[in-house]
Image (cartoon, rainbow, N blue to C red):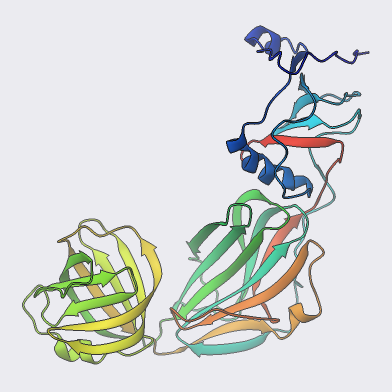
Length: 386
């Protein structure tokens, strides 16, 4: 049986040699956690569902490297690696350090439901947002599409908010499968941990392009991100909030009539001919002719790269011509919150660049969840691929 190691004095820092680590020898290393790493460790520690408060500057007890975990009794301070998990025992224990699956993965919305099919002209985004109450593993998600033809463009999106450092992670992916009758569509993702306190939103963006009208398709030269009046044949933007386009394009064609016809809700696509950058904006306010250019207040809905100054840019303006269907379960989250969440809500945006509206309705986006059991006898030091 292993003997409990006797710790060194607090200032006797011992460096483990490669031979000691390779041979799985006991190496006692009192560790002082440097301040810049404390918030990172606090974030990781929440995976056990513990406090968001950063740990003290000193761990409080010496750490003893005990190698790879095996089934035996460990002493307070023993530090082991169990799969991707580097854990330190906070008491004498025989429990396993790494979290263990509590059962099969599951969805939280019904496989069969009486969906109410709603519609809106053109572009629609719907999703569900959750505040996580206990640490979970998300292995994928699925989306419900009531109608899908070749005229529908469809993207899935995900958004994760971490309150520890106020950071966001966002992702958007095109769906190329064509549905003729609609239904659930499963989205494969790399599994990841979502810790207590985080917010996660998933959903889909749909646009029925049937009878879509194009009001403009020409080229201008990019003048940069500024507040200046663009010279002839050029366009400029101001922090993606305002777009200014000269009445004359790069081919010396007067485009006043087309620019004057643009209205709120129209969508402008800018694609660089050399950088291949692509940005899309929805018109919020059409300000009209200002001097020799037209001005528009806009909301950016796609950001894929940066334009080069003086780059020739293809500019195309489209207007939806048909309604887009989306599924809705009225009041679904008003009487049902998943066991792993402290709050759940539906989110809908009508028209590209519109304002998100939060409500109690359930929309066609559902997380694939796996629950885990966590031993309170171990503290997390680091996690690979977190």
